[in-house]
Image (cartoon, rainbow, N blue to C red; front, side, top):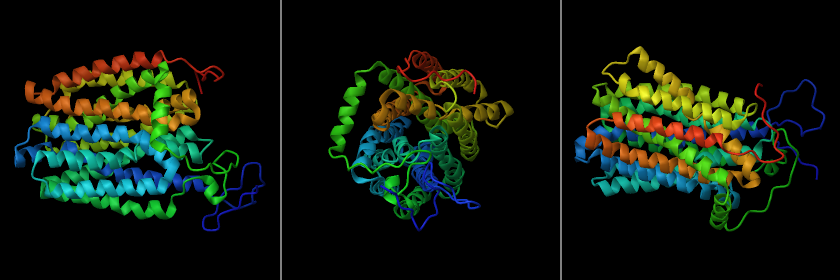
Length: 439
């Protein structure tokens, strides 16, 4: 079959086809990747809020940090559990439909929270609605887009799309912190709802489910017909889980990624701002530090994607987890009322390592599980969010009990040492060439 070209958007010629001299064209895959990037930013806006709202909600409603942390942990757990089913649903109903509904759910949850008066409503709106919505746009979304639209540059694209979450943090954290400080938490929640709704038209108009929909080959690959919609999405997700669970690498990847979630989303994103505020640092200053993490997260994740195309993913993960654990052990010594150079150094260092783990983890899923890798990665991501959820809740309980977060930082550093050992014992698949020691 000779694929046709799309008239609306100029595209690159198919592989092995002659190029038009003197004319530069953008492959549609890059446009889809750009829309995916913006979508993840819109969905990630809500993730900027929880750490900013512990004190305002506690002051207004008298809820303990454990109660607020439980709602955040429910959001994170559903985020992770939804991810593998979302990947299967995208195979069945298409990326556009699933993502548009997910963005609408995020907006509904964020907007409804404006009128909440009880803790159970916090858990329903923040935990359930937003958790289901953001979970449907989780990293399994970027994995699906990358697998369908790219054959070459997969590691780089994975890094860029993973950095979208950090970009959302960079955009919305300072903005939401300023709104909370000047106008209260409700206008900040409305801002997040609007951010999610604004992205929906871009998804519907510019996103496409498969390269064959516009008569193209994936970037760097050969043209292939679009497969028939996969029925039984939920059943397939469960079957893939059962198959993967019979293998050792799945548990090593899931366990190490659970620790990744515990030491990032569950710990730093949720509890860094309230912990800094315990040391009398202004909320806006602490939120700005998290935004700086977002800047260096983008750099570190994209660079990690580049490294993943060239180095052994297991060795990269071991280095990332080891360095993260060491940095967490020093954090209790750095907390002060003002931002000092050692804290800035920690923020830069931690930002470079924040989600640098994603490209090599996804690469190992592809290596181990082939065509099912997006769904397997969805389940591995579920473990990431379960780890995050546990620490989001237990971190709040520990603060209520001990009166400080010091024990939480130290425990997280020890867990990162365990993750380092876990990734080093993952065995390579036979027939897959060993990554070079140098690029």
